[in-house]
Length: 431
Ligand code: GLC
Image 1 (cartoon, protein in one colour):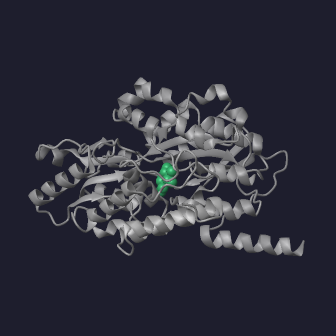
Image 2 (image 1 turned 180 degrees about the horizontal axis):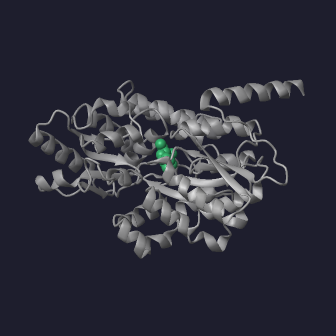
Image 3 (image 1 turned 135 degrees about the vertical axis):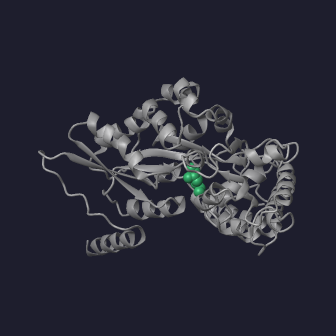
């Protein structure tokens, strides 16, 4: 008992130090309104915009208040918060936004409630298949898909037009177009192609887009680790070459995440950017330096292979230790409804997981580029869907990063990753 208390205190402090603290929820008497705590990553754009949506929920649910609490935008840091909190059985939040890669792990650990009644089999077809697969564990649904992400290529339409280029279909074309534009513009501030190469989850998303658009994979259909392969070696080597050999990507990409690259492109200092859909709304804000000058297309592939955007996105679930599970479900129903998803797409730029919205006239008029996203979301490639994904990611991250900065050859990085992944999945080196 004493040990438990000490552990709880230590966990509490660790969470406070890592993520900052808010006053803990006090149990409410029957008279007062119940307060639901909703944890999510930092929302793009001004925070008031999102608050307006929660106010709307409160207006429709007298007696319920929602306190939304932001975590850092990095998925890795958010994951760390949840593992510590949920392992410590924290009831301090009710609804949580989960990355597409966590639901299996959290469901298996028993940290989130079974929400199959919110997403019965007959309703699943209303959503893109990738997120539905992500929230389904042993035939039960543990979360409801909230918004969807896939890697996209943003480009400066004005610059490509000036040089008579269209959006590149292959990675090699992207290099050629970047080099021609950089030579022609003679602007030392202008970079060719920026992407997320820092050692974190975003790096995995980027690397997989090259490996898979060259015919490689992480696991095959039988779950065997097939990461170390000639197509993957070429893909990883090509990413390093973008920086060193072709000189189209600045070395800073090896320490950059989504927001760092979004800002550089937003300042008009890059021709191409790989990022998620949220960036579009920010580029089109009044006062943006590149407003009206941005195009979006599927990511390129290697010759003979289709583009392979990584599937991302966020799902809403209920903390197993929540004191307000029914109310938490009401908030999830509201936030994942077609109305709320339409609102989020327009106001914040988070893209709906409900496919019907891609035929919604009002939405298409407000966001014409969304029609093109439908096909990309349908075919976006999930990271391995397994409760052990985070362990695989933690093995791949340092190996891919070592290859990006030139500390390891692509071959050694892939082999070392494969060896460790086999160990995690099968307890042996494997083949
Ligand atoms: C985005 C994606 C998420 C991914 C993360 C990587 O938030 O939605 O799935 O893991 O970026 O940085």
